[in-house]
Length: 263
Image: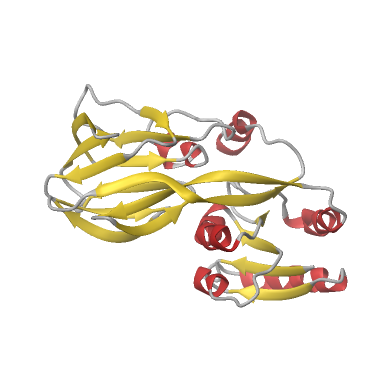
């Protein structure tokens, strides 16, 4: 089995731990390769059969789009604080690898979002798209449309469009609903809204959401800023053609995870 190993190498100690997991995988008969960033995975001539991401949810989000593009399932090894997306802890890697080699696992697919700005695709992401104000103070006015119907304008810090996976991330902190992973949907939640009638909304995954700022703002995908926008720009969020794939050994209960990870 060809196994790729990825991590956020900016975090202290991660490189050494990744090397240790690679040694264990090689001893188990795997051919191993490192990927220091998502572009390395995208440009690989022969993608691995499995991508082991060492770290937490943030590390997985860095590689989610590239792994989806190459059709490579992810096994998350949690070294972070929360780990909603990871499957095993520090000591669970070798038993997990053995089960994968024996076929004692399943592949879980998760919906992703596509973000287009003025018709050009700028990102595919697993958690969320954020349209946010440019400066620390004040608010931004965002006009929102769903399937070419006006939802209204909201004065706020920003607006989050999230997947069911992302519903337990920034969306949850902003007061948005939890959506179970078995449902494909788009959740739209204003952040610190100053407009009382505007509340979180959930739509079909096939809906087309459009966001236009009144003045200036920026757009981020899975926590990474991708561009600035002005009143002349149009941000469109839809279901992506890509789906992230994860190695799972059992069924996840999102409500138990929230109690365990966020209590």
